[in-house]
Length: 293
Length: 284
Image (tube, rainbow over all chains, first blue to last red; front, side):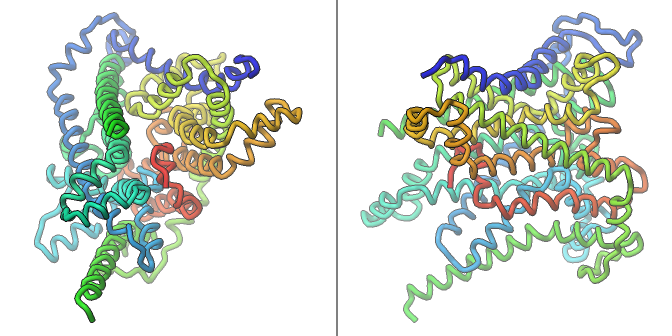
């Protein structure tokens, strides 16, 4: 083996770019979070604030509300997608004519730009010429207006996320189910286990690594949702769909409250890391159980 | 007909029914987007008229002939293509190093990489904006509102993704092949170009295409780190809703244009999309 210098040399460009574009902004946001800094304030300068920004954060009910809504949104979206995706994947296990076509169309939303997904759903739900309000009113006599009703707006963003990302879960579950050895299930059926028992005690435990990976990726993306919701509702009505990404955006850019925005960014980053770490631990435990059993 | 084959057929019918409904659900919003993009302002409010028979071309022609929109489109093409190229090259070099050398702490580096991908962009938009406007500057020139700035920023999410995906592929190439070529007198560089690259080519193509799609689709950084010159098509699309008296037909047309390249790519990579979207963690 020749010297490690060549190896580090090959790795260097990647490390430098990610250091400057990934690590440096993190350190910078950490630094700013200890200052009062609003470009439109009286001085417009950075002023040392200690932990004031964080203290303010803990009592900021609007921000905490936004964080809560984001968590609720993530929980509902990921759970629905997981259940739907698992069920859909299990219908794709056997071959039937046209399966490839169905699967390809199902995967379509995955590659559409989130901002275009938002635009699409906006046109679907807009009062006046959207399909949804027109037919809901005509067929079910429902007054559907996501510009006015908070709950409808929340559930519409949820529906949009499920439309956009269930295919991802379907495809990962399908990959996992296909790769799984079939003998244990068949043996268990012969031994008299019913379908439910096979699912509960064999399929789901064996699928755990795939399930945890899928939940991990979906959760990270759901927590930081901005583009689609921004296009669909703009965070409204009121603050019904002002998820934490949009909330930070508003504090940072239109209001230019840099110090406070930094503190918020850090808290969100912290939440994301903690959740990611918890899932990583869960994944490791699943791995251990499987290798020991 | 025996009862088992009857049940089997019933199951098949149920499966078809389910997937036909799902296909309709998937396609309906996209169809409606298309329908609106083909309607003039007057036709727009005729919602009951579901089937689109006319095509109002100005919705497409107006943005496509507008120099500003053309610039957005060209910027998106340049940024996505350059970023995907850069990311693919760097990922090959990095994974070659990670896979063939025993570097101290390389496992930690590997995991640190993925944390970059998971960071919420909303949390990074502010420090990036401040760095770009105030710190990354040479004289009058700042990195704010430049294509090179976007190309580098998109590395934050694309490079970790590409490294994770390529690592699995690189590890799958037996090291004996390297050694055989080395015995024949090839140096490290020749091994990489002549032995490794041809074997990773399919994986590299997937990496390139998915990186391209992610860069093309990105909105938040493009919106916060550009103002005029380097704006991309996603920011152009978002711009339609902040203006009063929105041209909904045009907005739909732009959304269609923004969606088209990714749809074309989907046809090529649909078999590998799972591996790509899970960074190689789930393979088909």
